[in-house]
Amino acid sequence: MKNEIHMLQSVVDTICNSFLITTEDGRIIAIDGGYQQETDHFLAYLKKLTGSGRPRIDAWFLTHPHDDHCNNFFEIVEHRPDEVDIGVVYLNFPSKGFFEGTVGRDDSAAQTMEDFYRVLPLIADRVRILSGGDELDIGAAHIRVLYSQDFEFKGCNNASLVFRMDLGGKSALFTGDAGVEAGEKIVRLWGDSGVLDCDICQMAHHGQNGCDRPFYEAVKPEICLWPTPSWLWMNNNGTGPYRTLETRRWMEELGVKVNLVNKDGDQVLSMD
Image (cartoon, rainbow, N blue to C red; front, top):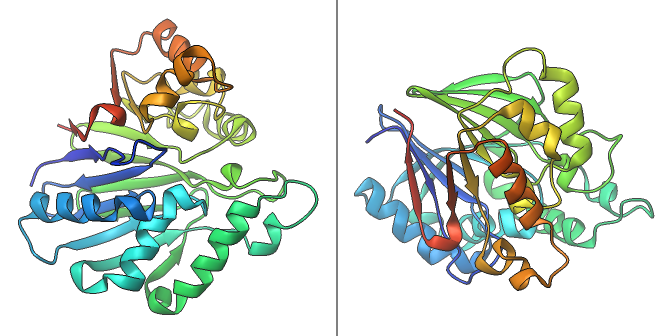
């Protein structure tokens, strides 16, 4: 295998954060995975990629408990465990109660936590909690966690794991659905260190209403990965409430050379 990032399309043209990373020493890393409607495509792609009828995912990162990021994982763990050998599961989820208060209430995240509690007994021995500052190696990939949940910030998106991956000759920043507040804290913590300066950046919250422009100015990416469906990419032909067109303008003004968008199908990016 090669050092590559594979960003999977949504087969139902919806928000879908689904990545597979391959390393030159044969490791497979998954990030999120999308809704359960993506499971057939996810598994077919993984099996073709590895040439195995029961491939191994050495590490699976779940950035935060929203259904468009986790439900494919839950579907595989509960109903199709014989099709994938899952190694370590990395996450840092708040409790269900965190999402049930009157401030920052998030019923979707609370329901996803219910689903997580249901499948947890099946994976408890493989779960590892990550915090900001943690570093780990998964084969040839080096991971540095820049941010995890902060109880000062309400809402699920700001509880996203944000981490840098160095693999081959390139660096990539994965942001989950991190919001403005998370992005501001990351810049405060790491902005002067050079760690944020990455070749590749996954656009936060599907490319709109996530991290603000100063965050991307600090990252200075050459390549942007957009887990963004067609309707969101175009803001419903300019008539919707989304800020995708604004974010696209930022990237143009910042001189981004390549935008890969999963509305255009499965995307493959070499890290060498």
